[in-house]
Image (cartoon, rainbow, N blue to C red):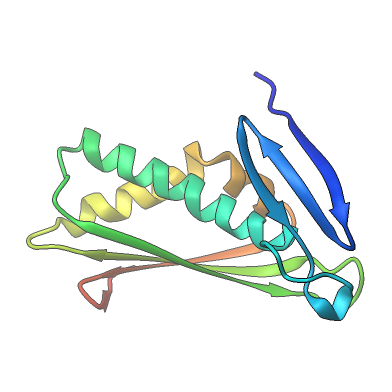
Amino acid sequence: MKESARIKWLNKMAFDVELNGHHFTIDANPRFGGENQGPKPKGLLLTSLAGCTGMDVVSILKKMKIEDYQLEINIEGELTEEHPRIYHTINLNFVFKGDQLPEDKIKRAVELSETRYCGVTEMLRRSSKIKTKIFLNGENIE
């Protein structure tokens, strides 16, 4: 399976991205010559990780017959000071809300995503330390 995208320069630091029929703009902040018209490329790495693992977790929990909950994933990357600036640490927080949710199954779903299914996790872990926390109704259950 092959993925592809087309990225066309618009002006200054802005590019139009076409990915599988979806268009969006990426840009830099004004400090680097952009106009902040869209997300920055490195930030998209974080959303890719959160989206990939989130989809895995939702799919796994559905197979476990767990469906009545809310899930929010908060992610933050810490960049190195030297160039090329990469995320040396990524903090990934799964925030679940719901009644009578089984901690063991939630932990297992997150673990399976991290260790087996999420390709974005596997790619990023080669250059970054990924720290995961799981919260259930405001309590850290990791």
